[in-house]
Length: 344
Ligand SMILES: [Fe+2]
Ligand SMILES: [Fe+2]
Image 1: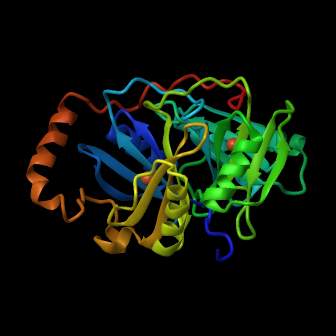
Image 2: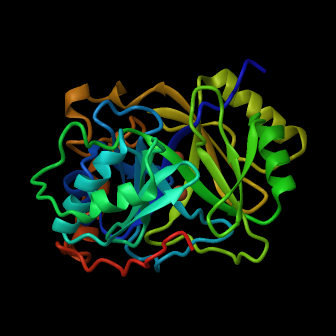
C-alpha cells in the first residue's frame, strides 16, 4: 500500500429537519459556503446540502440530509458524537464566542482539551459542533480571561473563518477491536492513546500531514445511538483515487464484510460499510469534485442533479416544494439547551 491510503476526513453527513433553517445557520452564522444543493441520491425526494470552507477543500465539507419526518437522534454506538472545525488561533475564540452569543446561539466554553482549546455550539437541530483553536503556549486562565471580556462582532472576518475539520468523535467499546479494524481495512496504523480531563480513554488516529482527525472514545458502558435529526449519519474518509478505494473494497470483500460496492456520486465515488461499533463509514475519492457540474463561483446556488436524475427534475422539484409546504421555515429557531460540559 502506498503510504497512508486514507487522507483524513472527506466529509461528514448529518440529518436536519429543515433545509432553510439549516442553511441560514451554516452560511450566515457559521460562515461556511454552500457548495452543493442536491438531493439524497438514495432517497431523491429529500434534499442533500453541502457546506464547506471558501475553497471547498476536501475535509471541510459538512453535509445534511433533510428528513423532517425523523425523530431527534442521540449519540452512541452507530451514531457518532460530534464534529470539530479548526480555526487559526486561540485569540479568535473570543470573537467567535461573542459573535455566536450575539446571534442567540447556545455556546459553551472555553475548554482545554488534549488537542487545543475549544468552544461548542448546537445547531438548530441539536447537533453539537466544536470549534477548536490549536494548543498554543498559553494557559487555560489566559483563554478564559480573554473570552470573558465582551466584544462586539458585526460579521465573520476572513481571519475568523472555519478552516477545515479538526476531528470527528466516535464512540466505541473495545480499543483493540477498533484499532485492528481500522488498520486492517483502512490502513490507519498510527493510533495514540489519550485521556481527557476526566480520565476517559481515547484512541486517536493521525498521520504525517494531518492532526489527529479521528477521536475514538472507548467507553465500555455506551448505549446504542439513534441516527435522527441533529445527529451524524456517516463519516467519510478521503482516498486519492479509485485505485485506493478499490483496494479497500477488496480487503472488505476478502472477509465477506458487507459493503455497498463503489457508488458513483458524480462529485466523487463512494464506498460504504460499517465499523465494528455500527458506525456507518464511507470512503470517498477526492475527485472529480464539486465544480464538475457548476462554475466554482456558483457552487451551491441552485438545485443540481446528477445527470441520471435530470430527466426527473420536474417531479423531484414538485416533491421538494410539497415538503416545504408542510415543513415551514422558522427563523430564529428554538435552539436546544446547551449543557455546560457538552462532551460529558
Ligand atoms: Fe471533540
Ligand atoms: Fe457521504
